[in-house]
Length: 266
Image 1 (tube, rainbow, N blue to C red):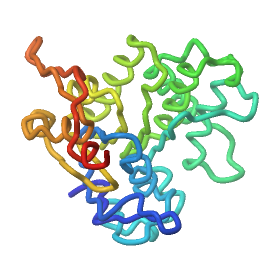
Image 2 (image 1 turned 30 degrees about the vertical axis):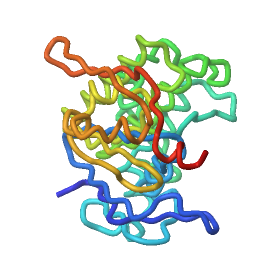
Image 3 (image 1 turned 180 degrees about the horizontal axis):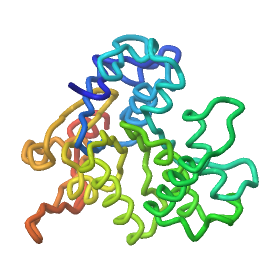
Image 4 (image 1 turned 135 degrees about the horizontal axis):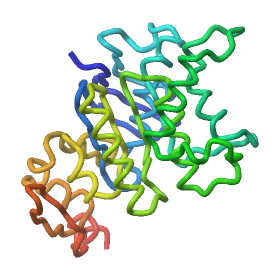
């Protein structure tokens, strides 16, 4: 059974349809990459699956239960969410920001316990930000802050992690660190979905790719299957250079191509 399942989900903003009947299942042990051109609906679908974006049609199920029927605290314990370009508006130490991820595990009046402190320390170490514990989060670089926000989500010990562009703004070394971390979390039994614009990282690390185009799911399957169908090239309007190294497939965006839709509009 899927841990989190979007069944024919539709999201609208006024008269605009942002997500159009999208279905996506997230299973324990899998890292799923949501890819697609700008405006394809990736972030909107992720927000709907987190229960943060109202749906106009379809359903989202958390372990078989309709998401709105799951109490807010239980939902917060089950699903970790990292928003795109997460910002911090209060001058808190990074350690205190990460500790906010433990709030769903405590009653309103309970103080922080040893279990909470251990969870915070583990999450910060996993994300490589333990050395930033005493730094005020508003003084961190964008990449450092992004990893602190990922640690906050992980501190809650979720069964599902939804991350919107968690490697955006990171240097190549930290991009690899975060992607290896996400793959490791999936290997340990978590269901992980991540929005990515870097196709090289998506193909290398993800077990499945969900390609969105125009608010719809255009392809969903193992990376090599999606590559073989050339759906990625059609959606992005590019030619991909595909190769193998150390037993893994890699891709590089190589050339733009003249899409039929673009020619018809001229």
